Length: 386
Image (cartoon, rainbow, N blue to C red; front, side):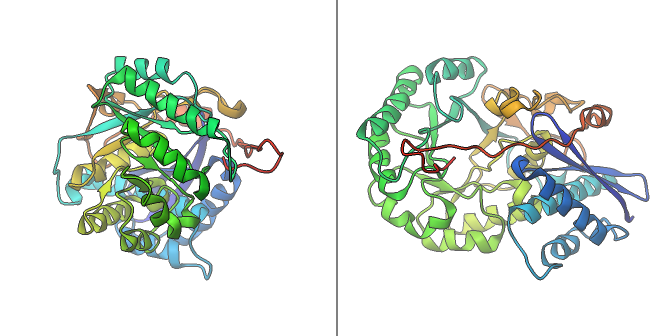
């Protein structure tokens, strides 16, 4: 069973789908991210397609190694997401050929469902109380919100106080046991992370996500010393070698790898590595249905996954930055397998990734867009982290 064709599709709101076809007629689907570098990702997909076409589609580990190691220069998000999209599709094909869900090929289920959380508040957090009321109405028992908008290297006490009050308002609305994760989004520099962590701690955040940018992982210990709040990171890391530094540092409590950067089997490997360090996993997935389905296959098979990010109703889906609207279930013929019930996601039971893609709609909506970079600025007009 050899790979004969690899196609890529850019569909609203900002997703890149990958279709892999074999000489037996079996087809699998994967998903890439990096919508702000869409042309680079599509170019990487073309390069990798040339490398793997004509090869046995069952040899996923070997193909993964070829895609990651085939060039002298390696790593990074563009190559990582292109390889991950193809790799997810190969697992989808293998599961369909064997008439088994991918989690069965990873050792079988250790759980029947995983707790989901959803976003509130947008990039520049606002209207968070109304938003959390809607999420509670939808059945969620946990949410995530950005801590702040732009924040300078040294910012004002009022910016810290405003972030704390937003979280306090959500806590008052939801009660003590509701999960409220807070994302620093890498936009908080080390000097401001300390007072912001201290201000948020009394309101019992579920975790603080990306307290510092990944390039400053070596400074996480200095931030962790000011607070007992759990720290999470990992959405901008790609392989076990990237995460090795995180585990060895013994500061991060929760890792958040993204299956559309790591690939499905590497996500499984990272979760197993985390288990050895008694670290929890909450996979990153503000993405489309294929990424979610692939992640759920791993969620099913590892014991230390505690929460799953869920993108239905995410602010990016509403025509963000001029792109067309789109939603999680638009491209799925069996959307019920990705539905949240009382705050939980069930594990898709069908073969492969467990979802059926509406290929006709994917082809109809395919359009190569270009999502512009944000141009966030501080008050002095210097560039701000987004």
